[in-house]
Image (cartoon, rainbow, N blue to C red):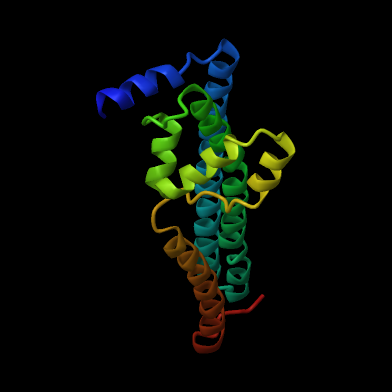
Length: 183
């Protein structure tokens, strides 16, 4: 950063108010609590699916495996919901960062979203935050795609669909080839 850029940065930056600091903290607390809940529910659903598989194998009832695809479907649904719910928390944090530092230094939310999505995604959220009209900000925010929360997320979705299909195929194969009861 040149001396002129540093001087401009100092002039444009301001100290966030106590309310903004509280909102910034709340945005991260909301994001963290939502992510934690998603992880806990995913672990519970994976454990339930494993329990169902063990029950099906021990009882040799192939039809029980047809319940299994519900678990990956619920995990996928929850992930989509979590992504939609994460956007307001991340946007709020980036909006507060933008108000405190319009030049765009490396702040926590901007860095997090840049790593998970891209710096273009952060810039899109900063552009929305810069709008004067709150109704226009919310309308544009509704059109923003939800953030990608983990690298390789598409692979995770393919794995969930694959698990669901494998369980259905396994039920058919075990009932036909190994004469397991279907129900």
